Each structure stands twice: as structure tokens, then as C-alpha cells.
Image (cartoon, rainbow, N blue to C red; front, side):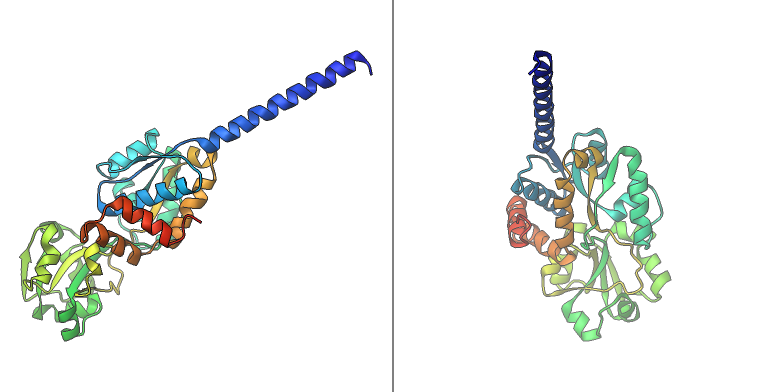
Length: 301
């Protein structure tokens, strides 16, 4: 064989192997990149953030937890800057609080707007879950059974026979009692008292009130003495839980997107009620609750 040709083949082979080695190294580096998972600083968001972290870890993706950030805008800025790579957010929060749009009941429009607007920050909203943490009205089961109340419309008509425990914040909101009256009519309660946010459910359990305000995923709703009423005219918009993630993170490891969408496909409003109850009512650690959920929902498979 011609020595020059042989040398060429050897050099080409070495170059090819070297290139392959570099590609393998780059691929390994991308798949081994640590995903920094964040969350806000309330029970539900902590649990979901830990669920995200656990499912990634169980599927061979290194993570670093940066949970318990102080609120929406701190988490949002951390994501934009790359201090975190993903965190659980709510469609309504992104649409109203971050993008400053008026609340919308058009879920397709909301999701489309979120992804289009967040793209300027190189961020993506993954598939939302059906878990919906929206505003709610809650009644005691005793009153619900006695007055045959299942919906907001039912409550609006029977309000004159019931006592309402509300919060100062709810009283002043445009989507509070005045908005409900405009949409449903009625809502003229027998008596109205203002209570602190942390004791509103206790007011019902202590028989000091019959109805209060809440959120659809509150852990106290796991209590069978309380009933979540149906917002039958859809007065409140949806706040679906979804992962918001840096586009660079998906590019580095597309498996992250697949796994987090797997969580969203499973997570429901009832799930969040039960998970929140374990922490807020039964005082379990959110880390343990998240781990047990991943296992029971078979998310680690």
C-alpha cells in the first residue's frame, strides 16, 4: 500500500475517532448536565417542585433543588437568569400576574399567549395538567345537604339563610363578592364576618359560619365535612399547573420535557387536595409526600 495513502487513512481514522469521541463527550455532558429545579414558597408548589426533581432523578438525570423561592416574580427572574431551569407555575398566574392580561376563560388562547410571550425570554410552557388551583367557595356538608346546594347558582339563591366567613382581601377584589353578584345574582348573606386567611376553614368546622372562600386545591377540602361548590357559570378562570422551563434545558436533554409532561398527564385537582392535606393537615414532610406520590402514580417507571 502506498505510504502516503496509508498515512492518509490512518490520519482520517484518527480524526474520525477523535470526532466521535468529542461528540460522545458532548452528548454525555449534555445528558449529565444538572437540572436546577425551583419552586415557590407555599406547600403545593414545594410538593410539585419536589415531584419534578424526584422523577428526573429516578430517570438518571442529575438535579439540584432550589425550592422555596419567595414568590412568582422571584421564581420568574431566577428562571430567566438561569439560576433555575424549571419550576411549576399556574396558567392564570402567568397570564394575569406576569403578562398583565385581564383574566380569560379561553384556555387555548391563554396557553398560546403564554408560550408566544415567554419565548422572548427563551422559556417554554410545557403541557398543563388538569390540576386547577383556582378561586373557590366552600360550604359545610351539613348546610349543603340541608339547603340542597351544589353550585354557585344554588348558593346565590340560598345565601340569605347562611353565614359567610370571608377575608379582607376577598372583600376588596373585583372578582370577589360584587363580581359574584353581577354574574350570579343573589349572594346576599344572612351575616358576613371577616376572618384571617389561616382560620377561614376552622370557622366552618367550629360552626361559626356556613360558607367561606378558598382555593380548589386546598388541603382542608379533603375533610368530608366540607364541600367544594361548582362554579357552574365559570366565573373564575382556570389556574392549571404546568412546568415552565428554559429552552436551553430542553435542547440539552429532551428527556426532561418528556418526563415533566408525564407528571402533568397524571396530576389532578383531587391529587393536589390530598397532597396538600398530608402536609398542611397531617404535618408530613413535603419531601416524603412527593416521593410517595411519584411511587404511587408510577411516575418513576
